[in-house]
Structures are given as C-alpha cells and as structure tokens.
Length: 624
Image 1 (cartoon, helix red, strand yellow):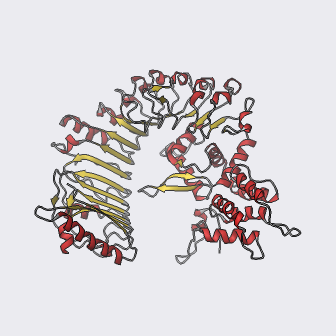
Image 2 (image 1 turned 90 degrees about the horizontal axis):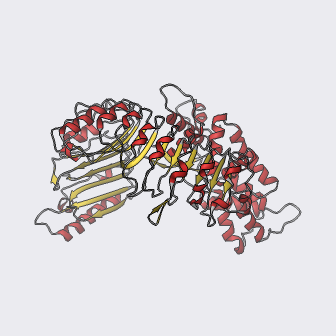
Image 3 (image 1 turned 60 degrees about the vertical axis):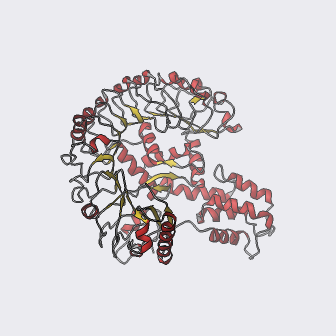
C-alpha cells in the first residue's frame, strides 16, 4: 500500500487496472470524537460534562483531520506522572489558540513541523502563491478567479507556453495546491471545477507564521498586536474584522512606502484617504466595503495616482461612478466592478487607454466606443454599443455579453464578430430577443472547439446546426433558449455530447405547448448531472433504461392530468443517480386544477419513494 498527499502520484503508483485509489475523507463527528477522547482519556473514562461543549468546538476547528485531532489531543492529555484532567481554562486557552497561533509546547511545534513538510516540498512559485493565502481571514471562502487574478497582479504567475495564458497557468497552480491537499476546494461548477477554496485553520496558522517571519504580509484586525506596525517591513496589508475605529489610526502610510498590496475585508474605509501614499501599490481590493455610504460616494480620487496598480477590485462596493482618471492607470490588468447593484451604468471613455487590461467585469454597464483597442483582454463582461469591435478582441476566453440588437444588420455583425474569437471557452449572451424573432441565422457561425460553456439566452428560433458533439468535445454546459423546440431531433443531438454535465433547454413560447413524443434513449447523455426541460410539455414517456446514468437533478414541465392518469411515465426508476426532482405542472382547459395536481403529486411521490435513492421531490402548480 502506498500513501501520498499528492493525487497525481497515486495515479502513477497504480500498476494495473485493478488497483484502487482511496481518497481520504475527513473523519465524521463520532469517529473524530472517539479518536480525540481516546488520546486524552486512555483509561476509557468519559469526557466530563463541563468539557463537552469546549471539546466539540475544538473538534470543529480540527475539521476531521486526524493529524490535527491527535496533535491537539496530545496537548490536552495528561502526562505519565500526572493523571489528573487538565482544567477547563486550559481547554479554553487551546480553543482560542487554534488557527491563530497554536498553543506553545512541543506538540504544537511538532504540528507545525509536520505541516511545514508540505510547504517546503513545493516549488518556489507555489510557495509564494500558497503564502499569499495568509492575507485571508480564518474560515473564509476564497473565490478561485479572485485569487488567481491577484496572484497575476503580484507577479507570481509568469512565463508559461506561448499558447497558455497567465490565467490558465494560475489555474494550474490552484489545481496543484488542491492536488497536494494544501487547500480545500469547494463549490464545484458544471464543468467540475472548484469555484472557491478554504484553508484549514492549522494550515492557515502555519502560513501566517511563515508570512510574519518573511515580512510577507501583516494582518490588521484591531488587536493590540496589529496596531504596532508603523515600522513594519511588510509588503502586504490585510484589514479584517470590521474594525470600529478608523483604520487610519492603525497605519502610517508614509512610513511604509514598500507596500504592494492592500486588501480590505468589509472594514472601515477611512483608510482610502491614505492609499495614495502607497506609491508602488499593485493590488487594491475593496470588495464588500460600502463606498456609496447612504447615497454619498466615497471619493476615489485617491486612487488616480497609483500608477503601478495592476489590480483594482470594486466588487460589491455600491460605487456609482468610475472616474475619468481611471485611464491613467496604464499598468492595470484587472478591473472588477461586479455586483454593484444599480451603480455604475457607463464605463468612461478613458478606459480604452488601459492597453494591459486582461480582465474587465463591468457587469451590465455600457462599454465605451473603442473597447476593441483593449486587445489584451481575456475576460469581458458588459454591454456593447458597437459589436463590430468585439471581433478585435481575439484573446478572449470568457465573454458575458448583455446585448439587445435593434436590427438585422446589428445582429449579423455580432455573428461575424463572434466568428473571429477562436480562443473562446465560456460564452454567455443575454437578451438578444430581436435576433430570435428575425431572419438572423446563427448557422454561419461555428464556435471554437475549445468551447466548454455556452449560455444562449433569447438568441435563436431553433437549435443552430453547429450544435454538434463532433465539433465541441469539451462542451460541458449548455443553456439555450429557442422559440421552437423539436425534442425528437434536438434531444438526440444534445444527447451525444460526451462531456456534457448540465443541460438547460428552454422554449420561449408565449403559451405552453405540447410537443411530439420523445424518449431519451439508452446511452444518451453519459455524463449529464443536471437536466432542465422547460417551456414545453412532454408526453408520454421520457427516459429509457440506460439514459443519463449520472443524472442527479431533473427539472421539467408536464401536464398534471397526464401524470395523474398514468399516461405520462417519466421513467424515474431508470435514472440510477437521481437525487432531486422538480416538476412544474401545467393545466389543460377543462381539468380540475387542485384535484389534478394532488393526484399527480401522489403518482410522482410514489415513484420517488420506490426509487433506491429516494430523491427529493418538489412540485409547483400551473406554470402559465
């Protein structure tokens, strides 16, 4: 048997197809408790009632990690000469120490020493990327893309193959840290990628210790220790815990000219007045700070002179205007303006001078004329005025486009421009209703084979011809609205995509209509996990045995009367992985609404009850 922390090594060690890789999971609560108490109470005695609550809190901090449990239990265990249980205040001290400075003693040092093995085993570029996680608060969910763009701004992600962009290289760094179990990936998307990560409290403690030793970052959380930093040599400042006192009292910016990164976690924003003193600042992230206090915007003029700035994060700040002077930030690579409600409506024309910009999320704000000059862009979100310029952004991998073409010429221009984007991996187009109701043909556009994610909202009358599994072997997510759905043909085509994990097929009809009978055939949709059929009514059978073997979530519309009468056999029992079913009933004229729904409920709940997985069932009345 071979054990390793690195997933790729485990695969190399498999000498035959019969070898099994066992992925260790965190211990469940009862096993964690058993391991913990066995070390502390070796004679089999029970935990005293007064220590029950604090012990549960300690175990929660350990997160089911045996190493953490054993190490902390060893600190609390009595020594050979003294068999007395250590007093409760000692347990409370240990609880307070976990995650931000482990209790001192040989066991705690052993803990950090053992954990440090994983850190020192990393190549130098991954050491720096991992150390950067020390700026985030304890138990914080760190968005993957957020982290990667900050790494890039700091200069931690460099080089790579000519065909590999910086973000993709940074993504490989993230995956390697997850592969080595140094971060805990969470929130997996339709393509199977983790959208965020967490850092175990004890790993974070090690990183904070190393960060302090190396003057890598300083945490300011309002504690007495964090206030004495005026002569700190730290290159990064992280403001945390919503300090009530003005942050300007905690830092004398003029004495810290070396600061390269300032990150605020919903803290007091008075610091913004001193930010201009950080002349070499590369990263400024104000996410979650309310810059639109009671309708009065915080003045962002202090940012205008930060000429070395690479990353400006204004997500969820409720800022209402982006200053014209933003065009002065010639080194800016990332500009994040997402989730600002009804804040910024227009991006100033000066933004087209930001020639190094790689990432721009303007939410649904109107992008300026001249956006085509930003030829370094890899990710773009916003409203376009002139779609012809879109074709100049040939490096785009990700596009979220809010679009409402007003005539056939504009819609055809969009089709032509999209045809020039040969690196596209994720494409989302919202609101192109005019295109769907005109003679605009999408058949002349064939997306790149690299496409993994496609969201087509209100853009087409029918499934385009290029929706073909042979052209897009990597496509894992499809959300498409059509004016007319032809299930017999469309479902057969969509069922052949080998990597498809999510299918959301919507019919944009003004009234729910019945469609021709269709059956999802055996071996169709081999990887599908989530399926939505909405806006059209299915009769009389849907799934044959062997179809959608991995499907977990199913959502569809159906006539309540057909289900109640037994005419519609969903074939729920043929879906072995099913966990959740959501049904919207449709009432036909002349049917008794409440009675039909109740009878249909009974039929579906019986099907769910006899299914081996007993999937959850949600039913909703008449979706008209």
